[in-house]
Image 1 (cartoon, rainbow, N blue to C red):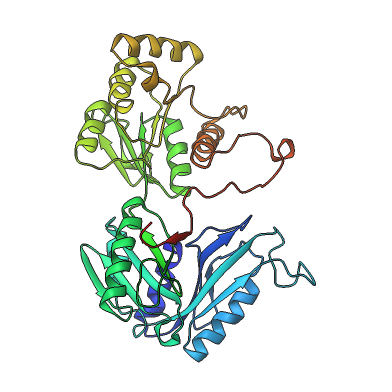
Image 2 (cartoon, helix red, strand yellow):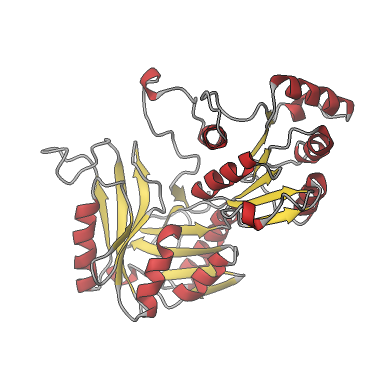
Length: 383
């Protein structure tokens, strides 16, 4: 949903009503994860995608109907028994799509929510997508900056959903909560989709070299908030790294230690060390490899450079378990030579490590193409 907010907000500010379709639940090889969204503006303009093209036409028509009727709809899409190419997913997956009208009346908190997201402040929405009482459909809680606005229909439901939504937000997860009609923990009947807008994960690129510019571009494409850091002010300039969110002049180890101390790195953070200079590399890796939660730590250099690094890091007291967290030489074996090709190989390794991919050509593998999402989209409240 994050990638359609600008267009959604433009319609909202103009006083119009947009049809917004959100993937709330997926099964098998669905092409888009829970939270993927598509917005249909009043003039028919489409932004975003819920299936990569498989059912967009049907969702577009449903969005127009929902806006006209003013009533949200939860629709399931899968492979059609009669014709797999009609309105179904040719990939064999199944997805549930919630389509709702969005306007100043139905979503008065939208502008404040977008402001928090743009300021990298955590926020979440919790929307009723199924309920025995149809008047509950579309009711929403907005959790932002320690404040909860809106209501689902009862204090009991609001309290239960707020607690669980905050738990999902803390881990950056989105998914469907199942509760009783009045928010009973062990009940069934009400389904609430929680969309978490945790701050974008960070990519910290150390070493202001030409490879760093290409890696920063890849990081931005993958949705990371990219920081380039180097101790040399002549190289660490915004002009050299236009796609980076920030460029910092500081000693890498000092900067990383300060960021960790401020709680600005977490398990989603990736670190790309590109300097291959021991006076920068070793002190930085001493800090990075001892941090309890970093998603990926990769270091550029030849195999000889890597072996020398290991010797120096062992002399500094790092354990074998800590050293095992280091991806070095950085990247997958793609035969890359240029900075751009090398950046693709680094991005590929980050993706593979995140989702559990093998890095092999799909022609050499069997089974499902899309790996299971590490974050289940169906959650029992209170568990």
